[in-house]
Image (cartoon, rainbow, N blue to C red; front, side, top):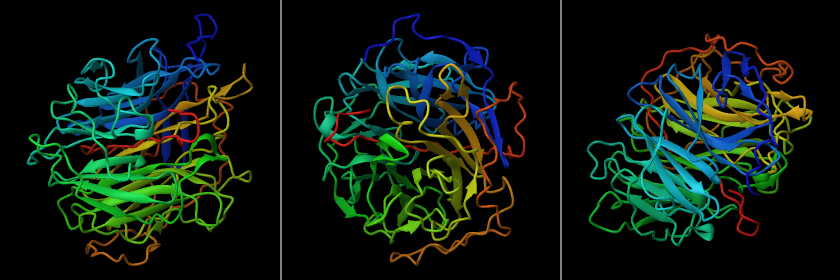
Length: 516
């Protein structure tokens, strides 16, 4: 669908949404130059990056629809210099250019990168920001990063690695720019090697680098098969990367495309993260996915880990701690690992909804390498994910989180703002800070059976029980908070330097029309 002609959508505004819930406060990101909500637009599928040298600097990229009446979308971006309280939305990477599947990341010196897909060709580009996401520069000509549908990338941030600063990218080979599924850049995204194939052709996943420079890719086959694939020599610029280890991972179910809560997209993709803490859990590999149990309905957020370099993985662990109910959806599950080894996970959750659709953002964490998980805590007000669709029956395909030693920065989409001209809520991008110390410190619940692989000796700390499911009495839509009060309430502000996480994106089934 081409972009809507000027004048076919309105540029009215309303106060930006600030939505407090429990100890958390969510701040709207896609605001105009005056910090107000833009009526009639839509924004979803956010990807967040945090400057590891200054946690006050955060950037988020998203799919920006200037009007919900068209599916034409551009590469929107926003930035903050005060740890997420005040957001600036300067515009899009390229005006009038059809882009999708935003993925952002950062290197260890604080440069931000933005991988964006040119929808018409399925070719990708890397953009770089050296000023905290305020402005972006394209690193190579349009489409020169190869790429394909539902692309993802990561950056090697280990100074001692041979591949320090290298960027690695993989995508769905079925809908590719030219061929292959994997490429590498050794010069910060300016040039990319000719693509190659990955064993098993994994899709809908992410990748990360261990402290020894080994590259790990987590992906699946759009169903119940999941793999962790390793390359030990991708860090060597003198050779074409090869993949020397392919491990099957049991995630306890199947990925869902076209589920009740997100009919035109995924209920979740596969996220892989490597622990680089230097402690007992160093180089552990973690995988998470929102999957539908075999023979059941709905989805659960399932977790598996490897303590031996991806040679084997534990049995899957269910992170969401509500009673098993096939009518409930726990979707868009994602994770991040803090520099101190804590694992943070967030997801959308319908456990409190009588209609099994209205969702809240939930949070849990683990301090013992994923053996046990803290009681789940709702960190957003409920919202209806079935409203605000911009000619696409979905609210994107993923959300993302970046962790530091005291908590995590989350970018997610929600429908808190009510649009009276449309008679329903609209999709917007939000930032929220989650933290184990945001409320009472939860006591981890041993939901995992002992893993078959060697386990670290770190123990989960916790005492009081956090309220796992706050009653969804807040209605974020009716009246947005009028003024952008710069003081978030109970959410703590301690911010040590965060470690950026390579986050994820989702891909459509090859049997259906591509929907990046």
